Amino acid sequence: MIQLIRGFKDILPGETELWRYIEETSVSLFEDFGFQEIRVPVMERTELFQRSIGEETDIVEKEMYTFPDRKGDLITLRPEATASVVRSYIQHKMYAKDPIRKFYTIGPMFRRERPQKGRYRQFYQINAEVFGIESPLIDVQLILMLVTLFSKLLVTDIEVHMNSLGCPKCRPKFQEALAGLMLSAKDKLCKDCRRRSEKNPLRVLDCKVPSCREAMAGAPAIVDFLCPECTRHFETVKEMLEKQNIPFVIDKRMVRGLDYYTRTTFELQTGLLGAQNAVAGGGRYDNLVEALGGPAQPAIGFAIGIDRLVEIVALNKEELVKKPDVFIAALGEESMNRAFEWICGLNLEGIRADMDFSGKNLKPLMKRADKLGAEYVLIVGERELEEGSAILRNMQTKDQAVIPINSIVKNIKEKIR
Ligand code: HAM
Image 1 (cartoon, helix red, strand yellow):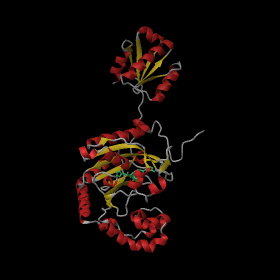
Image 2 (spheres, helix red, strand yellow):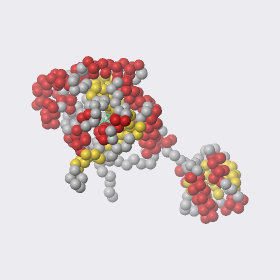
Image 3 (tube, helix red, strand yellow):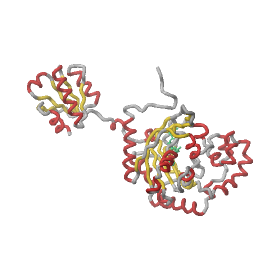
């Protein structure tokens, strides 16, 4: 038997209903906030991710599915969507008509991480990205949208973690402050971090290797080195979050795993998931549009991990699974032929109708209706056909009504809706 690839998974009926509920709830909320859907490809030129996520990140160094296509060009299955949305914003010169754009996109991402609970090699994200707004108020609005979604989905035990990573003006001072520590701790750092320490010290602070964590435990935090503009920006974000009654914690150690971030960064963390505690993450990437060849336009966004979110929504999955409105228990060939016409007619009218095609007698048919969870059963046999009526049974109350066979689709529709 051919099995699926490690780290990949099937999402089966019984689960897809919850996935779709989450997606539909997000779409409806995001559209209320003025977001429009954008769809971008799952493959891009490798260079796009190298230049945006960053050469020294774990994602680019270790986790991308990259391969040459038949002509030898290097292509990559997208590990995230932000880079593609930025590429699209630039490529279609969307900024020319209106630089302020709000997009959402939903789809699969691919990272070759070590598979474990809450961590897959193909996983799904709901992304929201805003272009062209520098005001800290949009940071607050995005976080408000995110926490509102989680409360709509009845997710409890969620904490907003915030940090500011400053701008290129803040970085040199921070790097200076780190330099001494980096030098003295060099022997304790892993091979990757030794290489990263000079060019990209934020990556060392993000390293998961225990010896690196230990060595960096007393490291200064970038939020303590912000320039006056970045300080003011972050102060406003915090003040306005408080005004909106959105609780948050400042997490000076949170540097996020992608190089493009500037200023506000945030994660939604939960205690319900074990080690993989981030269910959403995002932040500003004010320099990325320009870095990828577009005009200087600020931007901010986030991505929610749907795989992790489905694990923690306190919704009853069973209730989301759609059951037949009516099951037709047809006895004998003639009744079955009529029943077939009726279920087709009912399906076309938007009524979920089903029947059995194997010519069983009443007892197993009622059992089948029960198993499917049908709300009503329409019983029809030779006698009913002769009399021109059929029996409609409410499976919950057990009430039965005799309804005429003439225009049965209309009659059933009236009875059950
Ligand atoms: P990220 O933090 O890499 O950010 O991913 C966002 C979320 O995707 C995580 O919080 C997590 O829930 C989920 N996730 C990531 N990797 C996996 C995995 N291997 N298995 C299951 N779930 C996973 C980004 O991707 C940024 N592009 C977010 C962003 C958008 N920033 C600005 N705009």
